[in-house]
Image (cartoon, rainbow, N blue to C red):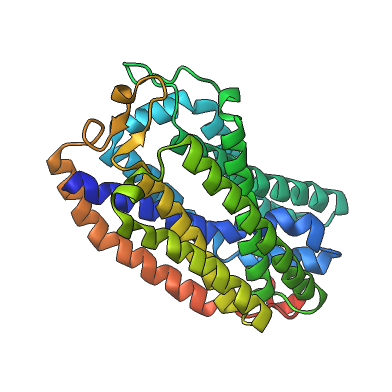
Length: 338
């Protein structure tokens, strides 16, 4: 029972991370296309500046849960996917540094360097996360000792790359909507226009990913056995459709919320489709890592659950306070910190 609870919490933590940091990554990816001058660039930095580090707390929490609740899966994942995960880590570090370093020197070349770093290190994490999770859904070549026999290039298969594209476009949609909330003037108008276009692109990529998943993975197995689980997929579809309706109505907060529901439920759809596996072996299903053979002791899981029940609400309250106080539209230079 505890293993199932922690598996679901693991999925929820990833879903929350994708919803919250997804718009940050999306704005950074779109910055070269939307920002026309220095004011636009600073607006984009300040639109995410008060939130990005708090958003990444959920990434740390998801990684920590993997380590503490499913240590064997953590060891297999971080040893077999070391290169990809280190690349993800370094890009996230550089993106964080770009927030702090860009404005330290009054020099156009210096700012351009960090703008390139910020955009590239927003695009790459989105792509890498999509590739990684698509490969988790598809499976990895794990042997009987749970050693990954593949390499970094093996992750760049058609399904993995499609997952990467999916994450990039849905985060770009999410980011454009957040910018529509926080920006003003021409930047806001360009963000809204981009959101309309990205919604259609996201829809096409989602349909392609679902079709590929149905044919080439076992993601739909749990859903076909328990049809009520399709409510998760229905909620994701409803969120995406609501997002488009609210964009048309000019209700950008509601559109962003709809996009968040879509991203969160889409992540949960994939996680529930994996259950009870965490890492699927494509060499032999018996060599897969599941919540049964990869979890920590019952005592460890009980202690962790107690800690989570205390500290997760504190993090939620803190982030709610931050979003309540720093989400107003940015209208002038005097409101900027970055």
